[in-house]
Length: 379
Figure 1 (cartoon, one colour):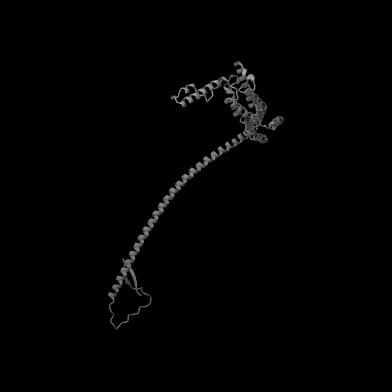
Figure 2 (tube, rainbow, N blue to C red):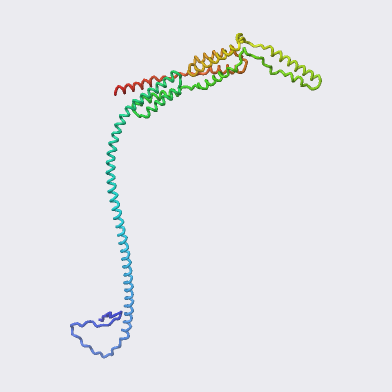
């Protein structure tokens, strides 16, 4: 058996196997001639050399590739190690900052806890003060509410002023709402009941009625009296100057001129005489100074009716208007339009309703006074 050994750079040398301890067999002489095998051995050696060169180059390339891969892996590892060091440094800085902030927060928390304890103590003191003040405030509010309800009751009883009473009751309800005390719930319920009752009342336009009455009062000077009548020219009369405006001397012109002259004559005669029906003959014999007192008397009657209207005294108001109408019918010319208008206005005012049945606020006022007395008794 033969062995091949690599001598250097792919050169192979054919070597003999080692000698054994067995005795050597002597060569047998052959009678046949031995052929020369050197060329065949030289070709096999070249192939082996080429294969060795190829294997060596592949091994060298693989070694270079492995060396490059290992170098890149080493660089990546070094880079990551450097990045890890930087991250660790950053995290250490953040940890230090967090520790500083934590210590700061702990210090602030201690300060806040002390302030919270102080605030709780102050709150307890304020609550005690508020309870003390609330007691005094409730007493003052009850006094104001009693005053407001009394004013509302006076407005209804004395003058029948529903709007004034509503304003006073609304003010009392607002005062009770601001204190937010359980004791005020019952009184607020009574106040709301009275407010609803007053709002349900029919509205009376006293201002409008008073303005219409004032219009009649201001027109007294222009109302014609029976004693001061003056002849009024008939609207159908033709002035004298129109009779001269004729053209020509025809028969028709003469006839029209005659008619116009007759109409003018009748107009002159009608100015001298006038027939009127007078129920009170004394009204025609009033002197000028007496006419002044007639007008002033009518003015006083209308002013009395105005006061009765604002006071909601309906019977007195109707009585004053009736006397004023009688005065107008006795001393004034009812055939004149101003007098007729004044009479119609007073008739309309006489039929107007100025008073309504107003509710009583006695229950609410008694409840407020009872609450005040109860608190004064407990103190």
